[in-house]
Image 1 (cartoon, rainbow, N blue to C red):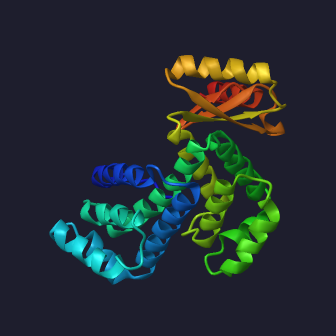
Image 2 (cartoon, rainbow, N blue to C red):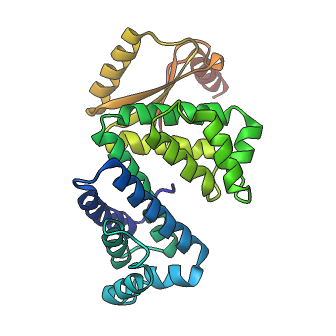
Length: 276
């Protein structure tokens, strides 16, 4: 799930997300899952077919011609909920063909998160994605297996199912299966962290990655959350990790900003001061 840095692509994604929300309105969980699967399928198709990808993302052509091309190729392959989303996507102005593919993949993931949100399970999905990312990231062989773009898809599914099926939310399982099927050059642990952050953004919260030498009590977590919310003037979701290397205190990362209250951080700062 790459970040869309170009303003045109961000606007295209925002416009298409509105169409996605309309497509999920009144839908049952199975219908939303089907919608997401179809969006993932179109993203995979465009990822393979470079000529088609360029044609559908060519901003120099008339949007209606791109729509006609998409309808001609996909109308009999997509359901009534997915087709309008794909049409809106190809009519939009993306900065590159790759951004169109990234956007469709992002929309599929958003659809699944909407499903979790409406079921009141978005918090659980976010937490599971974050924790699973840490688990896989700590096991080199497992990460290599799941991140291999040439690996057998069915084999990867079997590993994922054995690891988490029946232990996590259905949406979490769907998101993980899609990620390992098409890692697209990223490590699975990184993809899971991005998905956890997308979940948090879905709830209009920022994510604070907190490392501490020992586990924080519920009271400490609540106090930290209130403090960060006061500092940043918006809700903050805590993702906690115990790391003995921190050596006391806390190391907090929010986006590109780092708040280092650890003993290690203070010692490093002192060494820098002495060296100046």
